[in-house]
Length: 167
Image (cartoon, rainbow, N blue to C red; front, side, top):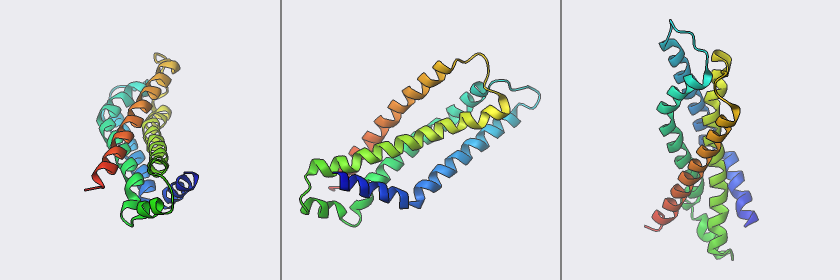
């Protein structure tokens, strides 16, 4: 299973689509944040969290869809050239092949989702300051809870990839 995980990590490093998607969504976060700042020209924005909450409501669906897309792309990329069949023929069990694909896909899609989610806050802090009404523990709790959502969405996407690949 270590060899399968290493090959998946090598594949993820070589896929330029993953980098493009990540950079594109960070840029989209930046544009939404700037538009939210420009939308309120007469008001002074004092809380990055409050500003990004409005941006986050617009962008959260995109981040979740991106997590599902990255997970399914990474887990299902080798169905195209039948690499999965060769791994099974070479003596790996189905369990090793499944978890060798699923674990890196879940990890990378969760990391991508977390980076997209955190990038909005990090972009807003220089413009609007962090704020004094939101505690850091509340922000960390929010990130931990959203990570569970990302893992769950990635698991569902991977399950669908493996179930639908047999059709």
